Length: 126
Image (cartoon, rainbow, N blue to C red; front, side, top):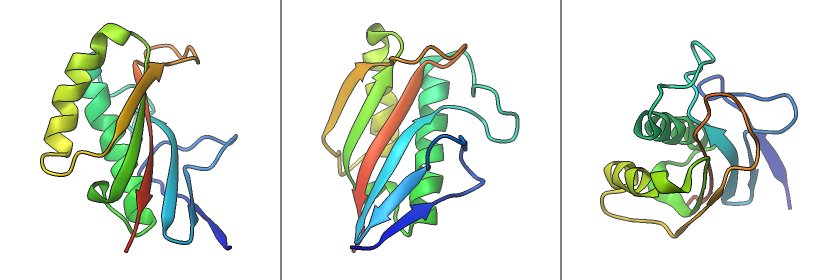
């Protein structure tokens, strides 16, 4: 089984792990924060702004692997504040209007100043 590391400058990059790995037709996207890659700063102070940016960053990573958000089969959202879950769901509805992949929510364990959300996902390509 061949593994291919996926990397794109259109999403945040961290030296300690890959943005994603593709194994056969499955892409595993690492936890991706809502950071604007042009500034390196959080996309904004609100959970909605950061969730939108995090999903756009995930979308860029998937695109680099030959997939798109509609190929997602599982999404794991990590939140700094569990009370933000309803706002995150509203943003997810914007990005996944028809096919809503299964998802789970956990508490964000790493404290990075200004970061409210991180999204990991699994996608399967055709």
